[in-house]
Length: 315
Image 1 (cartoon, rainbow, N blue to C red):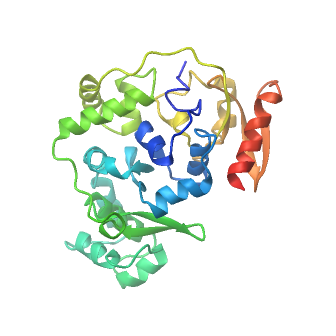
Image 2 (cartoon, helix red, strand yellow):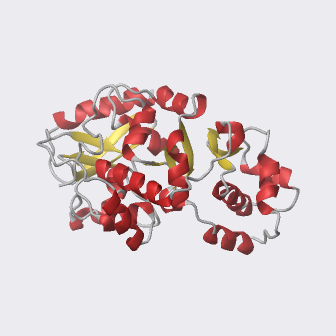
């Protein structure tokens, strides 16, 4: 069984938002409301404002392209070594060509458009690019800037993402860790601590590294902690939670008969009810109102505290 404790879902006291991100290595953040609720699932005391302060105010955590080329929250101190292992330009350059965005000056072009401007929406960037990129071409151009350490994502503005020059946001561009073995060792150390039990194949699936390199990293990092006796806990985990996406397979925690209820298709991943580390239902919300759809009968008192805590966090 996967370790709820390794994933911090037992909610150890005293962890700030930055420490939660550091302990997990990186936290999926393609859907910001879901990502914020992932912090709630791991802390009984953090508020939404606490997380947003760590992101927007202190800038201790950063939203950027991370493992598998997917948007994640990353601790600012971890950007150099993670950037070394996760940055890729091949797909970005292909998508730019498909969008008709070409030229030898693209990194400098997007760097100039972002520099000194603060967070900009896609529409604002498109205007500053003066016809060189439009629509999704702008986003892929920002991804190219991120590859060069020049851009990260800023706070949402009216629900829309913003993009900001890394030097403006963090004080300096992101410089990749030059020692790849050192970066691989750090990756394996963080992954093995937060994902237990796991193997190199799981690390490859989570990180996006080729399996051979994941195996090499695995040999460099120390073993994760042995499984401990854990008290059964109930958690309302958000969509795209690391507990679901951090391993190659979800079979150990999700019965095949219920898989379509969690993954209905079209890239949708529903929020789940975890009981004793196993997915026992799905849930949703409208505003602060929470509704639960169990797969089988669950003791009501297991979820009452969780539902109340989701409301606390959202309010």
